[in-house]
Every structure is written in C-alpha cells, then in structure tokens.
Image 1 (cartoon, one colour):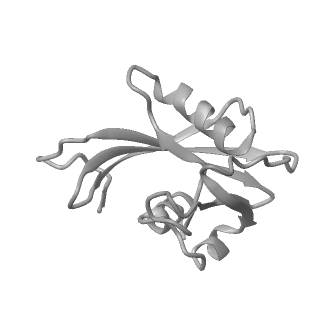
Image 2 (image 1 turned 120 degrees about the horizontal axis):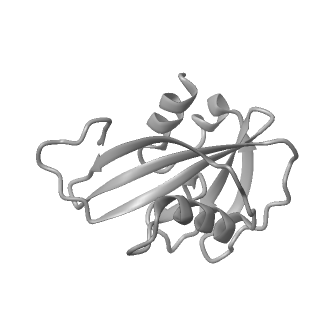
Length: 141
C-alpha cells in the first residue's frame, strides 16, 4: 500500500528510486525478466539505493544501468512510503522529459524488452505493484 504521509509505524528495509522517462507524451516501460520479483511485469527504470548513496546519484546510476541513458537534470517528483506484508520501503519518484527519442540499450539480465506508451496506455499493461497508482498520481489521471 502506498502512503503520501509517513505511517506512524513504519520501518523501511531499503529505499527505491524510479524515473518516468518521457518522450512525446509516452513513458518508457521495461519488461522484467523471469527471475526478478514480479516477473513479466512492466516497470519504469528503477532500483535500490545503495548504502551511503545519495538518491540523486542512485537514480542516475539506475537509469544508466537499465537503459544505457546518461541523463542530466532529472526532476524529483515525490517521496512515498510503501507497506507490503513482507517489508516496507521508501519510494522516490523522478521524471525526465526528453527532447529526442533515445536509443535504449536494456540490461538483459534485468529486462526482456522495452516499450513506449502513453500514461493511459501504460495503465492497460501488466504493471508491477503500485505503478498504476504512481502513474495516475504523476499524470493526474
């Protein structure tokens, strides 16, 4: 479950960063590999923040590792608090609007393929948990 405000009882195990990479009103979605948690679901470029790493550095690293893109001036959107029965974590959402369509080089260890979809079309895909709520929140759908 996503929370905008920190719940009274909240013990995060880690932090996650993610980025809506957007080109001409479409967002980049990555299909997760079979061995990943929630396999065969789409997610945006994202990953865990390493210990002692700044979140702004983590998102640049994760986007580069998962897509080959070296982005600058990524905008911070929101900090959310996520509670699942098994664990809790802090979730940071970023956004980057691109002027030119990039060449995506996905990391095949983590993802099978990539697609570009409008936010509305993305909601029709098989998405990782809570990504639909994040898309609706960011794009005000």
